[in-house]
Image (tube, rainbow, N blue to C red; front, side):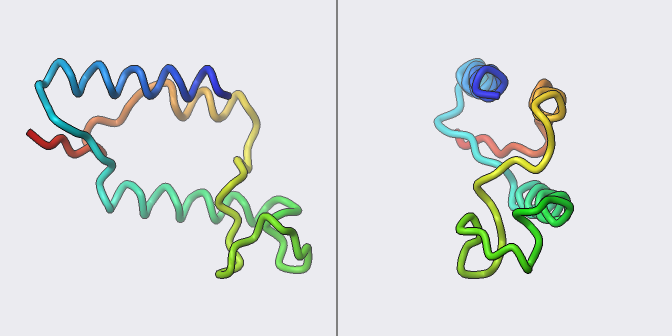
Length: 90
């Protein structure tokens, strides 16, 4: 997973440099959708089960530090950057 994450970051950094942008961030709507989807997937795991009492759960009862799917799914979801989900600052 770290290789997929690094490749994703490299693509974003390269695009930021090619555009001559000072910074890049994810849009609020993309972040909200990602977190909502992540929360729904996490509920299918033992860590996302409300009865589990896992230390992974934050004060709001959400697990945000684990990936709820397998490594192949992570690779597929990070292989391509959705540029419409990014905001570049110039």
